[in-house]
Length: 78
Figure 1: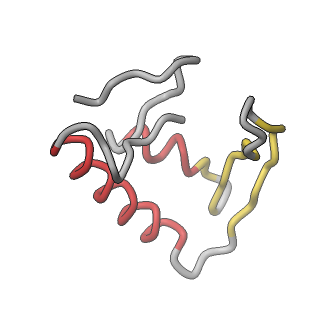
Figure 2 (figure 1 turned 120 degrees about the vertical axis):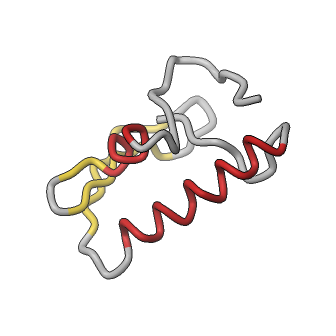
Figure 3 (figure 1 turned 30 degrees about the vertical axis):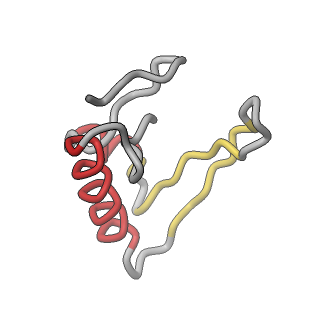
């Protein structure tokens, strides 16, 4: 999943990032979250999928237009 950055390149990306952040907080609020670790990226960061009530959180954000499927490379939001 590719989410917009809070310190993005344009007002659109920044606004979308804040909307995505708030929506993620709403989805996770008070819920039991399952973390499915999937390895690390080239920078050593953990890659994982989150699910709440059996639903993939990344897929939910993508379906709501608040993130997009990872294409294998960074794409501009602006």
